[in-house]
Image (cartoon, rainbow, N blue to C red; front, side):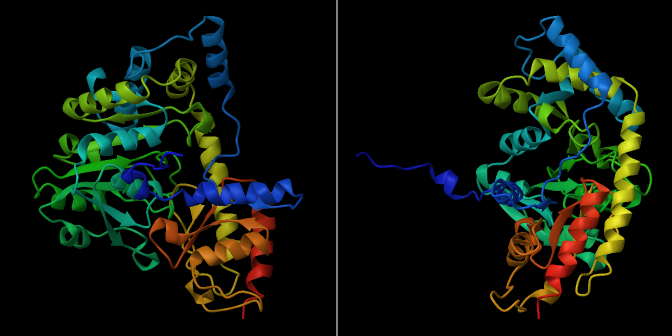
Length: 399
């Protein structure tokens, strides 16, 4: 038998803990165990009717063939309109690339811009895939620790200290997965002042949770003076319009960046699904009341879950300003036991909550913040109440 070997780049990667916990949750459900799944960041709402109608119309009109690699002209125009209308940002069609979800948009930018040994600053806690994408590109993730005491936000001083001659990019996510932190316009301007002092330093701005903001208007770092030329804005339809399965995201950036990403995408996926593009076009061009309805529902759920978890001794819970996650500090449980196992890490705690409490969460180790764990409140109020009840009961057993 010939040698069985994968590439060296695969050895750099780790599996996604969010999908791993979701899979474990589904395994327990398949065995007949009732599990409250709070591991995945997926809205439990249905895609709006006018969006589905646009997809049906696209099918009826046989809009089922290849589209241009960077997306259809009409969809790119819809994105340009959205960016101008909602963000005050001006782009041309050559400065927009539509991809198979915002995740691919992020990976496109990192793969197109990061060389072997380049450093990429990633404030922690971070979404699990950011450092993995950097590693895949041969870059070096540089973690900047934040925490509940500073609202999970990186300061300009921390950014300055993290920058070296090898620094190529900063990855910024606001509103944040997993913490729900939201950078204000003033905070972004302060970070921009640092960035502009360093030639060639780019910002990859993940704004997929833009519309899930509970403290005011969304601010994009690309709108700060001097930052349009330095910023790759990434967004999509998955969170705001409950369209996770449609797989439509985009990046907006200077033409030279988009051209490189377009070349890359043309070689490994081509353009995204034609029908999904028509659906996304309807989402951005159509009525937006559905977005506000979902935002208000998530805000109610946030308030409910924060209130319930703050009643559990040992958890330190911040009030998130956006997205649909809580990121409680749980380190007070480390070293405790239920008599059969000892909780040493947040991943241990997440496994304990799954196996004993039958609630699926994700340990903070995967997010670069080992003293915390993540819960998604993108689920019903009934599930939130039941999940909190089960967690309180399970955690009370740890002594």
